[in-house]
Image (cartoon, rainbow over all chains, first blue to last red; front, side):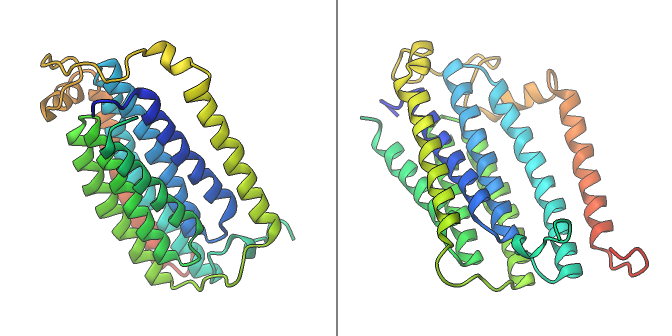
Length: 102
Length: 177
């Protein structure tokens, strides 16, 4: 931990966020899209912890605590929605779900 | 050069995230996600946020990803075969490289971050519980004083999510859900 500056952690968080965003745009399987969304959340928490550590305050770390809580609740509801969608339509590929467009 | 451990875990995290984004198999994607989350947790440890690192592994890499794997295997979706359509691949690559260049510029070359925090190393850890400490006690202190209302709302949110998931998952032929 001698030579990692704030910028190093922010670059890692930014690259993770960009990878997650790319996955959301690129993938067609709703479950994988959802995992990429979670990856973006994790990247944001990484930036929060880095800022918190380098500013010597606890508030960012506590915010990460809440982000993890909300993400856990969100994953449960989102997966239940995807399962309900699969029951009704029989697929979770987003390019097969075009009822509103057709 | 940054710390060797940081380089190792950053490479692990980014590689696992790449596996998540690129793998055509949803289960392989989930494995990459678990590895990426463990890498993020390791970075929390490197930032002296031990409590958050443990929480990340327990809640995210543990509970949430088990739920994901469970649903992936329950739905048993078949994966798309073959290469990506070139339009999709071009869009993905262009997005990634443009935004990655933006991230590097913003945090490395623009000088905005290093101007705020000139030091290459994090500041010394304090033992003052009002500041950033490694103890879980400082979380508890803030959660039950300054952040008491958000804590209560988070608890209520978990209850709402629980009820919502039960009502969503219930097999109810009349409501056509």
